[in-house]
Length: 187
Ligand SMILES: [Cu+2]
Image 1 (tube, helix red, strand yellow):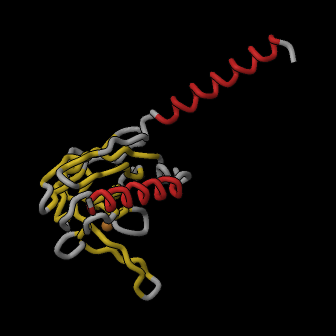
Image 2 (tube, protein in one colour):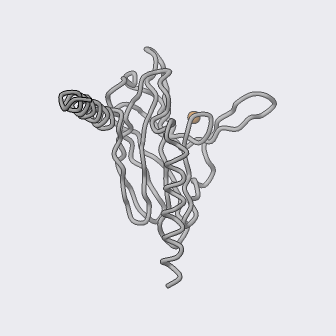
Image 3 (cartoon, helix red, strand yellow):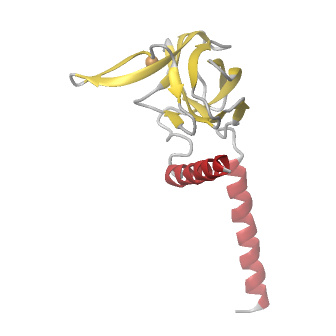
């Protein structure tokens, strides 16, 4: 290999790296939030077709504190008239969703993931469709940690959930962090 070849190769690498960074910081990348002991990661929502009256938001909630907390309610935003915390269960072969009674408990050290076919933030009475690349805001209210306005990054209909491809790695990182936290608490 000549020195020219090496140069070409390194340029190519630099281009690939730049591309990866651009994709990672794209519009679908949502912000994380910290309120009290509660950490909220990757809020996202799926785009809705024209005329749809409701949509759903998803996110991951971790309780980094020593006491249990509850996601008691949510308040609708710029795009929706109402907001509720819903669970989804299979009943007699039919998926049914209903408001979570008494709020969603997040135990100390626990991570609760709201995801498709499971727990979700239900946005109803949509004022306009949820559009890919835009955001929808909802105010989440925790019993102890208080309220936080969360922006859900809207991804296209049929697009995979953000972080789905790296979900395994992310979960392992979360577990490692939690174990460190638990060890620290012992001291
Ligand atoms: Cu729902």
